[in-house]
Image (cartoon, rainbow, N blue to C red; front, side, top):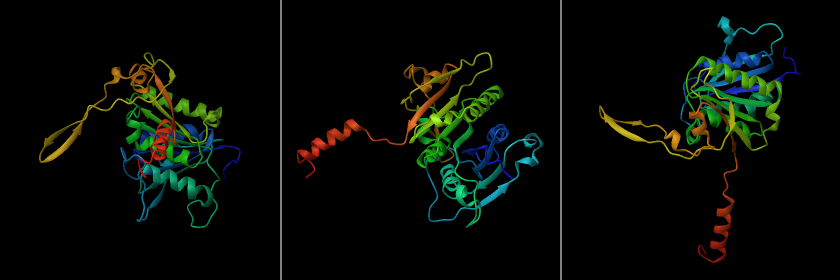
Length: 277
């Protein structure tokens, strides 16, 4: 029986239900909250905000407690996990739009509205323009679309200490209810550097870098293969890409509303002048 006084947390990801990084986050948060995991059954990296329509989705309950290291004991909250045959956006959309109200039944009772959604922890950075392609960031964006504070968590490298840092960050966000300070229509994109405990420099509030990848294609065995990287040190010094590369964890607030107000004025002037009439 769940404790209704505990914060209701949704976790999604794009690395899939088998991700040890996501499971570690779920365990850490289940010690202080009621945690519900909805993750793709297979990896869905780079799918951005894609969702499934005109075909059905399968849902399967997964028992995390089969792994002794993820066993939840004592005064811990609920830990329920499900895999879904869709994208990160599908997972968040189903959890927020159906499961919260009806559970997994067609007509049933769910746990109630989620208070915060974490997407991740992702293995691989999602700073700068990576955030536009990222399924991890899309999970947090989908939550924001439903009016739920969303926070994407990504690691640039696979160092164990940065996973611990990401978990500690998420726990603090829930314990201190910092997610309540995220405005409606905004979500956080949080990236952790490739660093050791000694070289980690702390946190920075940053803007999104706009530098594009050095994309190039090679032709091998009749197929075109994409490769490339970022020009990390050529980005603005207050941007997420630059500061992540310097050893900081970056917190970048993103908005759902992508309207460019200045361009609205230009377009209105064009319309008033009969340009499109």
